[in-house]
Every structure is written in structure tokens, then in C-alpha cells.
Length: 357
Picture 1: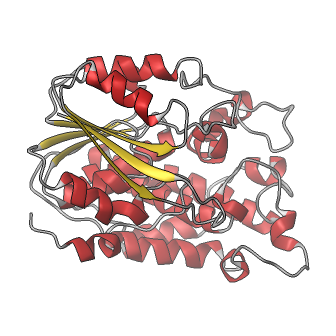
Picture 2: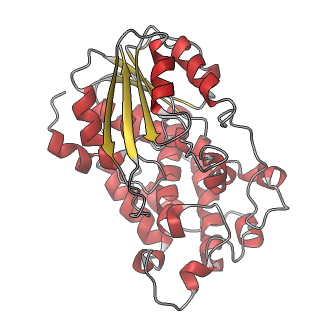
């Protein structure tokens, strides 16, 4: 597929997910377009921005992420090539349909993330998405539900300060104070309007390449070894002054709970103020991260390996390069300065690509 570099950013679906590479997709394209590969494995797929780039490039993509909420993005945007939500689907999802609606969010997250009426709306819509099973079966149902949840999650992120669920901070939305950050207009936009907006946008992003793309939801260490021409690795990033790499499970636990609605109560750590889920070990901490890199490099040594990482970080770029050199005779390093959208003062940070051939 021929794609113009200047079109990449506007073609990729928008997201407010922390760590998303969407803003640097043109730079990634510049550094990857001349590599010789057809099949690609995106091991830490997130909400799918880089996998979407590979799909735009005409590659056969296998998307993977350990979070169920991210896996649905892989189903909706990468694996899916034609299924969309039609007008009847959207009407069914957004309105009460006579079911006996539960009230778990309304009862247990009052004053935590959203207003009471918004919590009630989320309870309703969450059940409606599950009840799409009354209208569809099989793979069509799976893709319709993946789309609906992904769209819902994008709407949820818009209405959260910092686009996260890391603390109980609804007061940042509701306080009558002068603001130096945030988007009050978006916060005050109804969930229904945001859902319609994202459905319209994402419907335009679904396209077919006539290739069979796959979405997985697995621990990358346990993914069955398979031959890929290229493996792209964007693992949780650890800064020098932090004890652990970013824990996306704790940042987006609310989505994971919504997807396991009937078992949500049993999974919550009720000792936490924001009712996050019981902490799950990710296997990516500062004591094991070098060992994990080595295991992954050994596992995928027969593929071109591309690592996306931040600098300065732990381990250092030089350490990662040395580990990669154990399995690859040639390692190229590309870097560019990068600052996060919500923190313009973090100068001195670099996005780095290590390409092992």
C-alpha cells in the first residue's frame, strides 16, 4: 500500500491514551518503511496506533496486549476490516431498552470519576453493549462489541482529568476555579454526544487490506513463538526516579472492570479510595526488566527486532543495545526529542528506536 507520510497522522484514530505513539507515527514510518518485512508482531499494542500504521503500510499485523480493554482496540481497528455500528446499533446502545439495569458504577463510584447521572448512564450502556448478543452471534457480535466498547472508552477518557483513573479526583472537573489545564468544554459534553462523535470518526477508520490480521490478549512472555518478519516492542517505560515502570493496569483498571462487570466486585481492592482492581504482577519491574528484554530478544531473534523506548530510562539505551547485540550483529539507533502532551516542561526526554537486523 502506498501511503503518504503527511497523511499518516490524520488517518490514524485519535486517542488520549498515555504513552500512545500516534503523534510520532510519521517519524516511525520514516525509520521503518525501508525495512524488508511483510508480517509484523506488535507485542505491547496499547490502543493500536503503531499496529494501525503497519496496517496502513500493507503489512500483515498480529496485535497483542495483556489488557482486555486494549485487546478490544486491536479487534476493532486492526483485525476488523468491515464491521461497523449501524444506526440501529447506536440507538440500542445509547438508550434504555426495558432491561433490568444494574447500578454497580452508580452505587460504588459516586464522586470518584464521573457525576452521578454519568455513572448511571455508564451502567446502562455497559449492559446494552453486552446485550448486543440478542441481535448478533459469533464473529460479528465480537467485533460489534469490541467497537462499541472501544468507542465508549474513548469517550470516558475525554471526560477524565489527565485521561486516567489513577486517583479519585472528580473535584478537578467540578471545582469552580480558574484552570491552567484540562478541557472544561469536553468535560461538560454529554457522554452520548461523545459516543456519537467517536463512532463517526472510528467508522471512517475501518478499512480492508485483504489480509488476515489478528488480535491477541496474552502475556507476551507466553505468546507461542511464531515466525514474524518484524517484531515491534514498546514495553512499559521506567524513568530513573521511579520505582517501577508505568503500570497500565492500575491506570486503566476502570475499563478492565467494566469488561468483567459481573465479577467486578470480587476483583476490587476495597481498601483503595478509587476502588482500583487488586494489583496484578506485570513482570515488568526494575529488578526484572533487563532479564525480560533478554528473553524477548532471544525469543524473537529470527525476526527484525524494533524496540521503542524512552531516554533517560531504566535500563539505559546502551544497556538495551548491548542485550540486543547478543542476538543481532547490526543495531541501529534513532532518536528524537519528545515531550508528553500533558507535561510540556519535561524537556530532555527522547523517544528512541533500536533496530536489530
